[in-house]
Length: 259
Image (tube, rainbow, N blue to C red; front, top):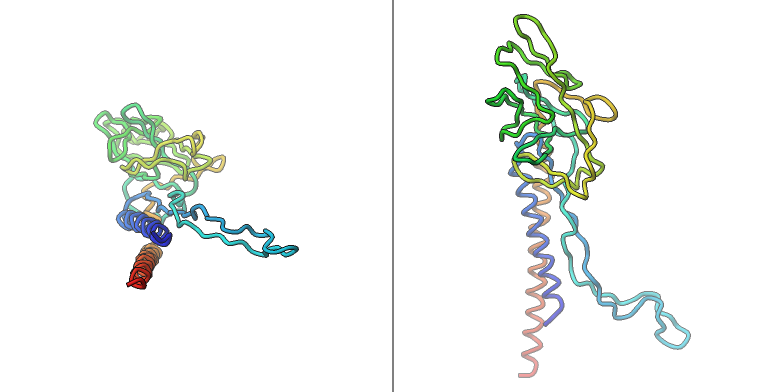
């Protein structure tokens, strides 16, 4: 069987995965705090038919080698943490992180991280995300609170009977390699060995971003970029299929020569 068959097949498989990634990015174009994914490719092993610098005749060395590649594979899918646009929601429990950092949540004995600052008040008064995971460290809003505001430093203030007081402070978390975090759905990420250990701090200090009250960070997906990537992947898939077809035609011609 011609090597082109298996080589082109790896190209078709790789471009199919790229289209899957692009489709997920486009599907989440309106997801708060979503970060687009990007796929990286690597070429596969080479058949080294002749090494560069090898002697091709007495006293003469080849200036180049003869290497035939075996195709391509997906090396990794990374999230791109460029900032998204800030959307004014007017909701006093919404916060957008302007800069570096994640909100920390706990649920079912696990710790999760998110850029989605759409906070809600749970049945027990604690601030939670839309899936019910509790903000960590927990902050409880009194039932008789007349107004809630969140400062740029994460301080949560409530007004009761005309008196304003602080009831806690939202902490942020960051990682040495945020692209190493594991996406688990529900706008949540989880620590891995590749991400490094979480570093906790306060908004606006030590390199952490500030919290913007009443805003949400929108997805950083750019539709034009994704559509260009989609067309590029589609054309690359077609070209690889043509390579398989060309190989098939060559084999057909070779088989007919003996007839």
